View 1 (tube, rainbow, N blue to C red):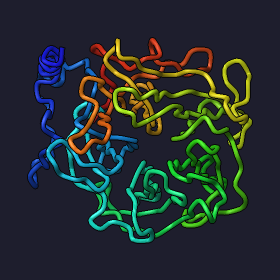
View 2 (cartoon, rainbow, N blue to C red; view 1 turned 90 degrees about the vertical axis):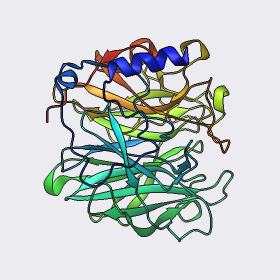
View 3 (cartoon, rainbow, N blue to C red; view 1 turned 180 degrees about the horizontal axis):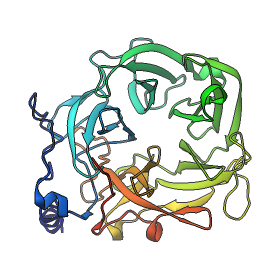
Length: 361
């Protein structure tokens, strides 16, 4: 089955960078030359990048490229990546560029840099990141800023930790900005299985403003907000992210007319109560070849107005990296909006050829 998948992938992508996870392009070779074969290309197949790209965040940069950032990890080539950075012109052909950090942030004695969230702000690149270890009693969230999407990102230090903000397991940040000009407000959402919280940030995004507010109960982590047609859509991951082939990770959705909530599922049930999980968006199982889909990026919209959902998932037949960590490649599926509600076809990761996003360059 693995050989069959690889053969299909080669046919679909005549120039797909299968070794992108291992090879950094030489200087001056990052320009894409579109062949007639590529111009005709109309489909892709998951995963869109491997061997690993956990907890992804995707942005479109000022240079016209899409950039992706992920949790630090040691890949199959044995190289440890301190927040790997990849880039693509079309969301489906990616190449490794660099690591976001040259030096590990030092405001915490130990831990990993997890779940980076990057946003373009006034021509600079702001990365909020988690700093934590498994079972950490006081994880926190920091900020780093870069002048270029590939970095290097310069650490600005700690925004807050669990003790100072009063929220256990303060990881998985997501910056959300709403409004324009003088009316724009910036909020950071975060949390992992001890409630999802939000807080307004200062104009320079380097400190908190006002009091935190709770928008979801203890079922969720890896929250993400999308504003569409005057409503705010909450995407949150539930279940176990990192149990290899046994992972039960999945993503559910809720909606609100106010950024602060209440967020409700499709049946009108609020997700603020502990145990409430929202409405199912995507889940996996071994029969389809993918388990544990979750921790999605902000939603990406193509030139035709279609929305795409980028996330990680686990191949149960190849579920771990050499060091033992769960291997989580980058995946993508189209969001389908029906009666004001987001859906993914079949509520499962796409396993066959899918239509490619329309991205004009």
